[in-house]
Image (cartoon, rainbow, N blue to C red; front, top):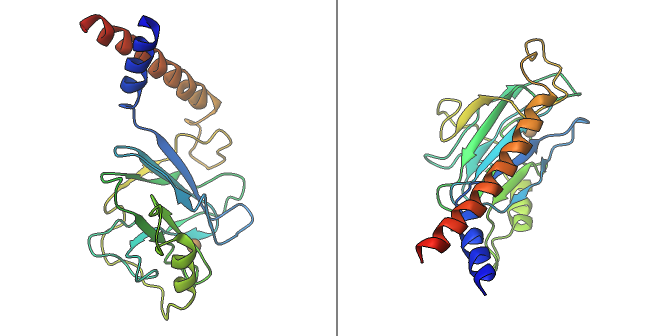
Length: 204
Ligand SMILES: [Cu+2]
């Protein structure tokens, strides 16, 4: 019984740690997709968009207007890259501040939005506002519009630190050591969550 109390407290404590979700913007082979194109994220979680060739962007849209910028929505700007072996050094990191509202997005390059390069964070669990419906109406959009706001609006343009095969000209700082670091940090978080749970238990 005591053990289960500790376990419950630890599980509770561990929810305090934000998760990072990685989304590929385009692919090595030039497909016009986001992978994954549907992300389930909690409040405080981050979504890191990694850009593949040749030149994509990510902008927030309203469900009703798939290929148009949402007012005060996020905007990465265009992140060009020619390297098909690794994602661009620059990433766009978006923090989920409200997990109860769906966040629709698209690529504003050329006709990419119309080609189905759209996605969603936290799609509604029921009803007609599905990613399939959003994708369907994007096909009928008459134009694909880039936001006029500054690149990096509503998020953070950052140097990519998670690539272990980075081949960019100035990427000597990133390497396999980084992923090891992330793994040990995760272990640390889990250990801390356990410790916090134990601590909570002793306070009861
Ligand atoms: Cu694109």
